[in-house]
Length: 355
Figure: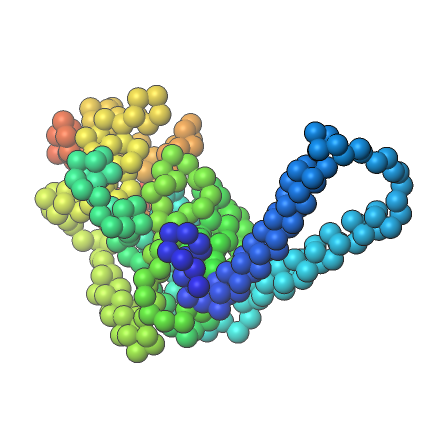
């Protein structure tokens, strides 16, 4: 088995164990070749050096030698390619899946949709900004912790349908033996079957933008009975959280919710104080967009910027209430004191009546 900190992490799926075994096989083969080739080379240098009185022999076109040094590498390549090909084909075979989850990559978070169970949620990095800025101590799982992990049952073949909303991402959890690109406009699939309960961590393995290093993945595997209890609780919570789109929210409640949405989704670019990053991301504190042009503010949050591709369209990522809350927050936080209140029904109307 792998040694901690030296080899691959401990595999917890059959496919991950196959990957580990293949890794070790290739390591032994290439290591043996290394020792043999360099051993012969150094032995020849030592025993056939000119200072020892050795006279070099001249020979050309030895057919036997050429056949041998062509045939041996060919056999080695076949010995390496056969198990590798078998493993790749096994990784691509998601037939017989018992649970299907759609995974969508966003800059810089993951959306999980349990297609047959009516449960969906966004998974964000939960490492506090104070730790990232080195103001507070970094925890054990620094940058590898999320607010809502992907939860799956053990002993169940889980199929992932992967895509992306903006740029190419890559869903990678080494202990599960899964690494699959999530590409906008395409649906790729992968699968895994976890042996035992536990928490397994990974991250986006594709350079997907400025906060690429802040896009972790956490998978929590539960025993089937515990998973069913978790699923029932999530379904109950989802039903209870259905919001009335016509509800009129007070300013204080919108500000509290908007601050949370801003911290999860906007702070990386526009910064905690709303000052932005000069030359890259505009300031919101004191800007005309956040203090005067309310329709324009709603439009850019919903649909993104037509001039600057770095401003994402949040219409498909956030609910009407979350968008109303974060716009209200941006128009009344820091030095912005407009008193403007944006309600969910305003966002619904800006969508053209479509929630």
